[in-house]
Image (tube, rainbow, N blue to C red):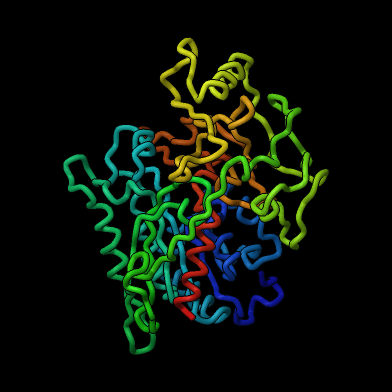
Amino acid sequence: MVSQSVCNVLSVSPTSIDLFAGCGGLSLGLEQAGFETVFVNELHPNAMDTFLMNRFGSLVDDSKNRCFDIHDLTQNPDELDALARRMRQEHGDITLVSGGPPCQGYSGIGHRRSFDITKDEIPSNHLYGEMAKFVSAIGPKAFVFENVRGLLTSRWTPAGDKGEIWRDVVQTFERIRVKRGRKVLEYRIGSKLVFAKEYGVPQNRPRVIMVGIRSDIDLNLDPNGVAGGFLPIPTGGAPNLIDLLGDLVDPKWMPGGATTTYRTNPKNAVQEALRQTREGEVLVKGDLLTEQEYSNHRPEVIEKFQYMIDNGGEIPLRMQTKKFAQRVLPARWAANGPSITATSLPDDFVHFSQPRTPTVREWARLQTFPDWYEFAGRRTTGGRRRAGDPGTGDWSRDVPKYTQIGNAVPVALGEAIGTHLLGLLD
């Protein structure tokens, strides 16, 4: 990353702007691919705090290189134009703008938690238009839009046409025009539903990815590739959970307690990679371990979880509830690979070898965050606070650690996309 002292020098690294950045999963993946994040937008203070605390000393440490509400820019043309001019002066031609507008209103479970309103009434469902305005002003070489699978089939209203929201999204980005002197440029676009497990991520996690590349850039796309060559070829390689999480298992764990140091050395290449610090050192037995705090389960809950572990995930009839369809995380995947998707609700899953739900650190590893990455805010909050109350006009949402992680783009997927785009743009 480039320090603030050289922020007026044109960037040597490919440059990235992250909109609706969340806790920074996509940006981290892009940074691992070789990008430098030069501007960030994220509305929620806890998520922004997470993003910044893991990039201390970088360009986004300077308040002029970040904003909370994208409307402060997109609804003020003078402000947006001034930012665009400054970005070009300080960094030249911005390489990439990426963004995943909040998706609660597009996903099925998110919409059910949004109460009795139609999707056209949810303000966050229209943020893709603000992203398009931003892309049009900045005019990057490429952009990446990502969102949940439900976007592909969503309707604005119950009487609407299936998939009409996605069609509106695509058309909005197809209409972008960028002025470069006397030239007016547009973007060539490719998109596809991809599954994170195809890129080494230990979960299924479907995501809609759209890539746009500016029309003045010569491309050598593979028409037989993913999305006509706009997206990377799958690599596979998703690790089993025992290989991913086995070194975090503490035989002396206690409900409500925490494990603060590694109990063993890394046991395989996956663990070594995740335990590598930013300086390249691999953390060993006795080194500091963060975010490994355990939920304070009641004795009857622990009994239930242990029964599930011992009986192939079966829940005793006397302990069954309508609230959760809990599953035991498998130590090893079935033949078709990862079958789960990490959400904002760790209570959906039980650890494969201990009667408890996953910790924040384990949840982060499912999203391929390295262990040095820490998270700001509370561990979790109640469901109502995570959903807000649109019925009363309250669109605010709590974004605790589990939610930040669950909402993130998996780091390994971001790195694969970033590496592929650099290959295309070079």
